[in-house]
Image (cartoon, rainbow, N blue to C red):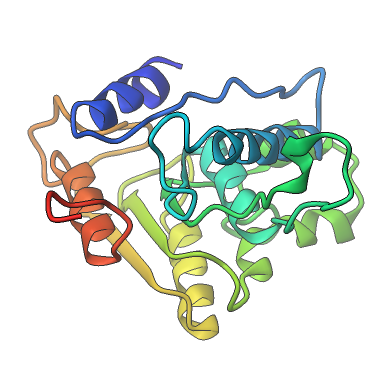
Length: 222
């Protein structure tokens, strides 16, 4: 909640970008699909109140780190357009983010590069293999997946960089705009890298440049 949450929101705010920190329900008490429902609810809520907060409803993204990166990838690949007949106005809105930033994300829940701890936390130790496979989110990428920015370090021994490469390759195959910043140095959990003296210390500034390139960040001319 600190360097992968509040610090990120403040970093965004310092650059004129509204940042919200999602405190979502998780293991051991809650398992899938509760975390995803919380993420989707958050996106819908921000979208509902966008006008009041000076936010463009078409420029709402999600940013997640590690296991939170898996959640963000789920939000990007398992969204729905909302239910126009819902009594709750929040539920009438789309849960699809307009972009996603995935930092050293867990992507694969099965196979040689899977992160078993995340799988067990999310689904339990005896999860149905079909469910496990379905939540390896590189398999869920389609042409409807929003633009994706990925960051990983090659020396990450907790969540292998191959996770980000799998997601990048899936995006390329589906024609989804994607950028992967793969740093030579650094391990897992480096956050924004603000205090690093390494080749990943400015990776988050690449996010800003990418958002501008994609037309997802307002400029002074707008």
